[in-house]
Length: 239
Image (cartoon, rainbow, N blue to C red; front, side):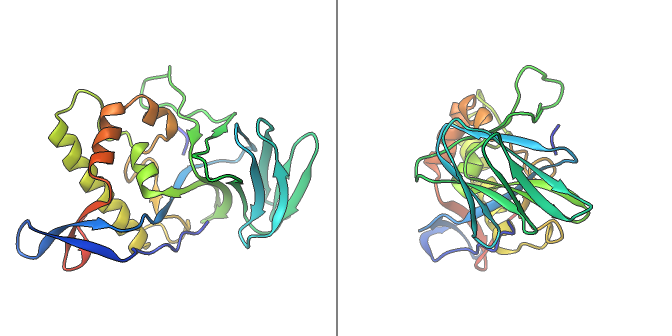
């Protein structure tokens, strides 16, 4: 099992006149905030690659390099120098700030963590090592973390909380509950404030990214059918 500081907040919402009980209501968001996910802790360099063009920036936004599609780059953290290092056969960069890999196009990019091993339970046949959005290496709370930042709907697609074969309405209800949890984690980023991300990929909601999304079509349909819908109580997401 593999083990950006997000400051996104809930955007303006449109409330549907559907009372569940007391003053709880189904709410559909008019925009999708981003969520940051702590994928895992590592003491080793991590090699990334994408079929899309991407950029290397630090957490201040400063550009350190542009990488072609199909070209890999390795990130590591030097604990002695307290410095982040990125390199491949053509480039070298270092920074005292966390380093981030960002897609250069608006397309739904995919990053592959080439040397990551991310199984689920006893199933050793599928390696869940692909992710949408932005990837970051960050030293926080005495550990080096790989953090995935992406919009909440893409995050939900990659959850492994339920699979194909479950009743449709159950999947929809679970999708709404999972989205409500995610919105609350973004709006109230307290639990993982030391690690500087919103949710843990293993210990909050099980998140396995693109590979899970590709193999879990019924769950993805349930997420899409309930897009933007959360349960609130007195204006706050219910978790």
